[in-house]
Image (cartoon, rainbow, N blue to C red; front, side):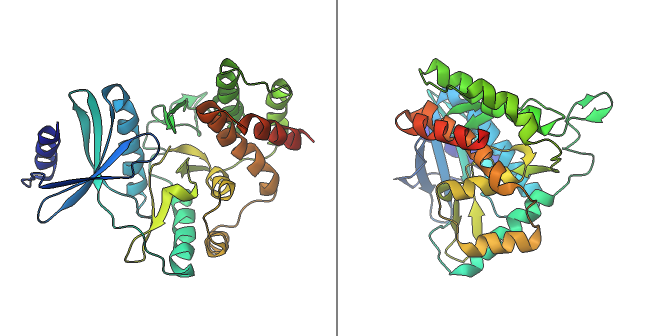
Amino acid sequence: MWNQIAAHISEITAENFQIENRRSVSGGCINQGYAISNSSRTYFAKLNQASQIAMFEAEALGLQQMLETKTIRVPKPICWGTAGNSAYIVLEWLDLGGRGGDRPWAEMGRKLAEMHRYTPQGGHGGTAPTKGGKEADFGWDINNTIGSTPQINNWTEDWAEFWAEHRIGYQLKLGKRRGGNFPRSENLLTAIPKLLEGYKPQPSLVHGDLWGGNAAVTEEGEPVIFDPATYWGDREVDLAMTELFGGFSGAFYRSYNETWPLDSGYQKRKILYNLYHILNHFNLFGGGYESQANQMINRILS
């Protein structure tokens, strides 16, 4: 397998690469991660079962689209495929672990705002379908994953409809199959269009899974984000998730708002946006996330 991966790297980079050193590193809670290197170059390789290749394909596409914005640093995808029983993706190696005080976090806030403001020529790469002659603004070219849960990205013209159907509604369906009890779920789904009534966000390319574990600073002091669950959505979903599990400094939020101030009503919308991730955590891990989700639903409906 490793020889096949090395050959694929050599083919893509047009530089002969043979793995001289391989060590296990964190690949998140879903994948196995490895640093693979020769005397001059190191790459980051993630492995999963061969059946999960679509997850790596979507990750590569998301990273490529973020790279095209020429804003915030993300690891460049090198190659991906299957070898034997394994799926793999090979990424640029970045030396993470830098600190640097407030400066890199302020830069991260500014660059994330710039990525959110990015508008490609010809719309979303010219791929979004139209409804009645109007481009469907929210969604993505393919479905991807949030953690290991499928994330549905069907192109949708209306943001409230997209969030109710493809985010909260889908997670609630999965949660009920898992045995979860969400007594006010139907009330919530009915309320979402009213809660978002009159709110017309600009479609932004979002990271989609931006908690503290998916953001870091290089040893040179450059901010980086990685492990995306990309789609075109309301930029506030990224800001909301940065608050969910902590890890982002005050300098990050100050800089983001100086670059592109958040709209009024964010403090209430962020609960609705973070409910998606708490429901997903229930579907992945169970436990107390059911109770937390119901508490959030009650707050949203209060």
